Image (cartoon, rainbow, N blue to C red; front, side, top):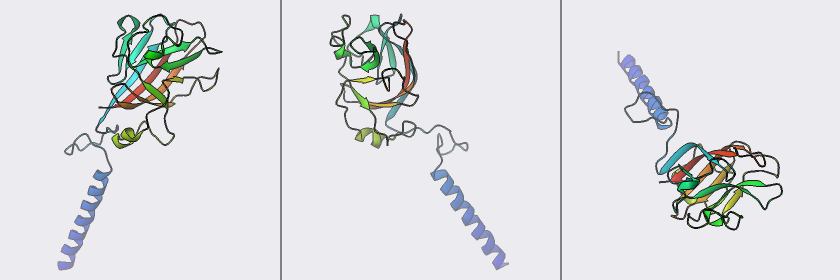
Amino acid sequence: MKTTIQTLLTALVVAVIAISGASSITSCSKKSDPTPTTTLTFPGINSFSAIVLGDQANTNPSYVILTSGTRVSSSNFSSSVDLDFATTPQATPSTPQLISPDLRASFGFTTNTVGGSVTYIGSAPSSVSFANLRQGQLDSLSTPATKNVSLFATGTTPVSSGTLFVFQTASGKKGLINISSVAYTPSSTANTVQFDIKVQQ
């Protein structure tokens, strides 16, 4: 009888350990939730998905506020705008880029050249994962030295889905931009870029 009780107790302890170990590596929406969530969320980071911007030749040119994921039309341009999707007229062939608004005049644009935030943007380190980004990793990213990035890997080849850029806004917020797609044809009025954002809260 004693042996049977010991066996049962041992089995119970093993089961508790197994359950405890599983819960420590499974993401749930709350401790009492018996069903694990499939999307990991990490504290200190805001996420915004499927943002689509039209370039400056588009019939709907637009900008983005990176800390809120808000798309801003050209007619509503303001000092809160952080990034501009623009096809640079100086490049050969013309190159779609994300640029800091304060570069608009130097890139040959004559509208919305005053105001807008100063945003630094550059290629993200290859060691960074957009899907599994933690606050500590985001905090430790270096501020990019440049204020514009090309959305073409070469002069004629669009970047692939998942190309990552790191940015820092004028307010000091760091984040990542994950490019989903770039639709670009020279002289088109329908050029767009789609991306997701993760940014410090």
